[in-house]
Image 1 (tube, rainbow, N blue to C red):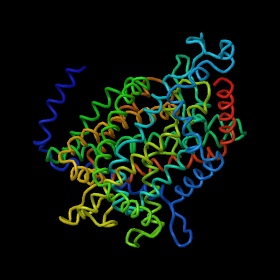
Image 2 (image 1 turned 180 degrees about the vertical axis):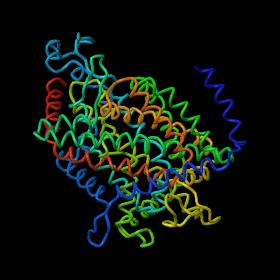
Image 3 (image 1 turned 90 degrees about the vertical axis):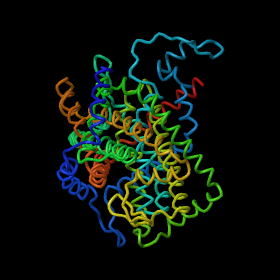
Image 4 (image 1 turned 60 degrees about the vertical axis):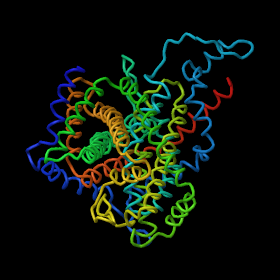
Length: 536
């Protein structure tokens, strides 16, 4: 397999520069754009409130997240240390064996033996692997390209609202991932099937809302398949292709298609292996690529430390008194929350699919782990990216906030329009010369890990809709790999319209279910805390 792949790559890479079929990328984009525009307009349907048109989906997202944060007493803050301990494996014994068995085998001194026989362990991956898989589906090009788009179109103030979205989104992740484990289905061979499809259908059935549960579960599954093709796939391959094309100065009307084919081959090799293979890959890639990106961000932030106060001043002032040119305060809030929602996916329910596969007897233990995701993704990494771009624009005056078209911004010096990933690359390269090459590698790894994680999310939804046979699996994977190519060939504007709308559309069925099922999360949470207190 390795040698066959090398032969294919050695054939395809030289053809990038010499591709003769001009306009193939444009033809793909022309076919894709009309649907992307229609779908975005449908999902972002707005209602007039106080003179502003606010998308219904954002109202539902913000209201739900705020309610969960207050109801569970700010778990993102109060339970943050507990989440760290769970990931470290501090409570592994009771999660693996159950409270009664652990207490039965405890010594008189309160020690827990190293091994306890267990005949019915459920789950496929560890807490860390589940977190790494889910984080790989959220930490990605939304943090690199998406943040740049938010800052360029909404100004520095958009950063503030992204952070707010991340903080309240921690509570939503806690709720949906707890339910994901609680209502998962385990097959005869130990394979775990979970996610909103299952907690919507099973959980609402328990609440005497069987018909509503089936409808919401079916709608979610269909939308999740679409989201796996869009935000979890096409957007990733698009930005990876843009960065490769820019760095290598590639030309030709079929450049995007060929890069997409190469990415599709690489992704296809991994997704054949299932969640265990995906988890083993992501637990190695995610810490590595995140480490590179965070380290570079810190270098730039410390290099501009004297401007840190000015940067945060712009963020806070822009959040509450933005320029009318960038849409006023409501416009900035919408941009901030929309980009944060795309980045951390809190409320979309997608991460619950990965977390459902964890090895634990206490659903709330994984909900606690999951609340770390929006913090890592939005509060930390997105904020770092935003600071780097703000520093860059303060120093170079590269662009005017709000002066963009679609998902691109106009450079002040040349008048050229560039996408999010190019803008971020310019910002990092201005302080660390040549870093764009390292960033390109990071972008490809981010894109790769996100695509393989989302392939699992989409496949689980596909299985829910069409059964768990091998033929159904193959059909989905072929379609998924086709969208790798489509994303690489299409323009950023077309891809981000489709991707944004697909991710946000998941909020409708998922959040409705969460607002009905949250009392069951409270019971699971209290049961887990009681077990911890009795043993530790």
